[in-house]
Length: 85
Image (cartoon, rainbow, N blue to C red):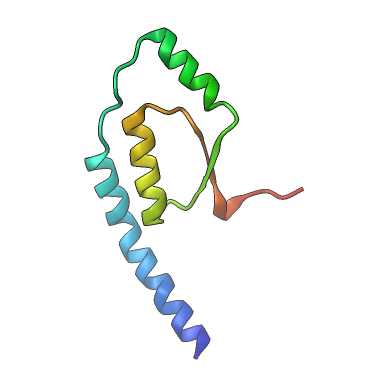
């Protein structure tokens, strides 16, 4: 029974993910405008940050949109394919 439920959820994710990514691409806002000095200051503050994300995660989608709106240059890492040493 568990296997059937997992397969159903995977199927739903496989179907919905392309639509979610398209919607994100179409609705991502433009970044706010800052002077070059202010943007450099923001970039330095965000230098040590990283977002571990899933492409199809709706919560990650919201965070990526907000990062784009605020003009934050934060490294994005794929949480599904993380290489652990």
